[in-house]
Length: 361
Image 1: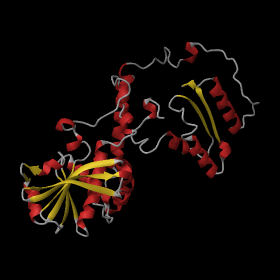
Image 2: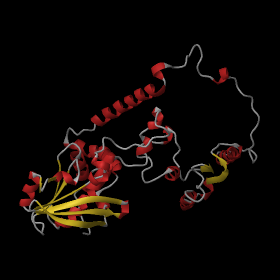
Image 3: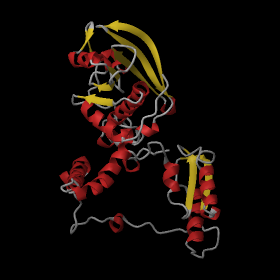
Image 4: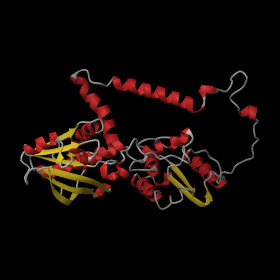
C-alpha cells in the first residue's frame, strides 16, 4: 500500500512496517480513511481493525472514520469527497447541515490560476527538472555532512552526544543487535580433511528472519583450545581456502588451536549465479526505469535493507554461532578487505558487550 510516487517513498520508511503504522502515528487525533479498487482494497480487513483497536485502547473510537467504496477504481470522487466534508465538518465544528453537499463554482481562467506572468517568469533550464532536483539534494547532503562533522568528538565530554545522535542513527540503519539473534540452527552437510585440518561445511537457518547462510568451520582438533575466529572476506568462505590447503594466516591460527568460522554473506559465494560477484546493489525500478524518478532509491531501500545491512545481519548470526562453539573462550572478528572490514566494524558495534548465548549445533 505504498503508492508509486517518489514523494511517498524514502529509504527505511517501510522496513518492517507500512502505511497503517504511519497512519496510526496520528492517534488519538481524528483520522479519516477511504478505500478503492487499488492497493487499498483490503483495508477493511487488513489494517483498519488494528486502527480500531488502537483508538479503542486510547478511548477515542469516535475519532476514527473509514469508508470502503472498493467498487470504484483509484479515485477521489464525489462519494469519497462527501465523506471528507462530513469528517471536517464534525471534527472542526463547522456547523454545516449533514450531508455537506458540493455547490457549483465558477472555473477561474488560466491567467487567474497562474503564478507566473511577465513580471514573474516561470523558471526554466537548470532551475527545473532532474538537474534542479539533483542540485537541491546536493545542498541537503552538504548541509547534513556539515552538521555531522560538528558531532565528531573532540573531547571526552563530546562522546555521549556523538553516541546519542550518530549511534542512534546507526542502530536504526542496521536494525539488529546480537541480542536479537536466537534459535539459530546449524546443519552440517560434509566433514572433509583439508590441508591437515578438518573442514565442516553446512548452513545456518535463522527461522525468525527467514534467513539461510552457507557456512563452514575449520579446526585442528575436536575441541576449541584457544577461541573462535569469525573471519569475513570479500569472496565468501572459499576465500579462506587455497587449493588443497588453507591460506597462510588461517593455517597459522589453526595450528595455535583456534577454530575458524566463515560464511557466504548475502550476495557472496553460493548465493551467486555463475560465481560472478555483485558489482552493485540490486535495485528495483518503477516502470521501465528510463526516467529519473523511476530510478528513485526509495523504491528499493524503502522496503528492503541494503546489501551492507544484510551482510551485517549475517555476520551477527555467524557471531552467535561462534558463541556456541567457544564456550567461555574469546570470539575474535577478522575482516581485512574493503568489503569485509566495514561489515566487521558494523557487526562489532551491534554485538556490544553482551554475553552471546550458545546456539544449537
